Amino acid sequence: MHELGKLFQEAGTEDDRQAKFEALLSKLTVANAKEMRRYVAGLPVESYEFKKFHYEWGKIGGKDAVMHGATTEKPDMSITLAGWASANPEAAMAWYDSLPKQGRGNYANQTHMMGGLLRGLADSSPKQGLEFYYKIKLAHPQMSGRMASVLTGSLVNSMGAEETAAWTESLPPGTLRAVARARVVWDLSQENLPAALAWVEGFAHEQDAGPGVEAMAKAYAQKDIFGSVTWLETLSPGSPKLKGLSAAYGYWGSLEPDSAAEYLNAQQPSKDRDFAVNGFISGLVNKDPETALSWAEEIQDKGLREAALVRAGIRFMQIDEQAAADWIDGAGLSKGSMQKILAVRERMQAQQAEGK
Image (cartoon, rainbow, N blue to C red; front, side, top):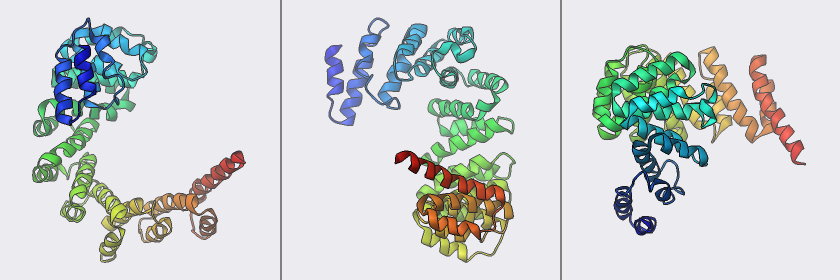
């Protein structure tokens, strides 16, 4: 095993590395797992090898594999718990339920533990994963969005994007369906962009479609910014379309502000244009906050305009304190909005004083 571990660590090409890792992993047993772990312990937590090793260890090691993570610096408990739950969902669930409710025994962050168990249960059975998700939502509603993404990600990995997209259509309207659709969009658009666009078009008119349309706008914009915008323009009016426009123009404004500005200048005032400009400002503000402020003034909706002015004003203050202070006096902002921007100056001045 030591020889296999060294071969893995010294592998040159990515293909060779994967082959050596699979050879090492094929020798994994409950007895040698702790010793074998040292060959992956130094890898990034998000690396394939780190996650795969701990997942497989969890499958065969169960509670002992999970509890070993309580003694390590890296958050491997959630990964080993996922592996255990995929292989023996009843035992993993019973162990998790037996833990003290406050902090789950102080073994790890409760959200990570919960996410690991959910991932493993979904790998074992989409039905079991869905049932556990609803338990989480009932007991911890603030985690419902994050756990919806965990559940969907697990299903995408096990079933594929197209099958998971079909699964989302069986869900009732609400947070889970909205987040699940948005999560699937990314994977489906990489595999088959026309299919992803057609799928999103089919639900873009629905009340909870915002996250899905927004995700589609971003995914499409990464491939073709103008194509994303013109596709959004074909959608029915409503909140999902507005979210999508804001997202696409945010990407456009960050990469190609001149062409985005030219396209916006050719448009007549409308609600769609307001949200497009709002997104454009988000993309532009880090590069040119002063120009972003000028664009914010063009937004017709009062609330949206003031929110955009605050975002751009905060960035302006961070870059040029004196110019921003001169601007804010005549900006016509509400007292609350002015305070948000001035609070940035106060923090900056406090930090400067501490540094002296």
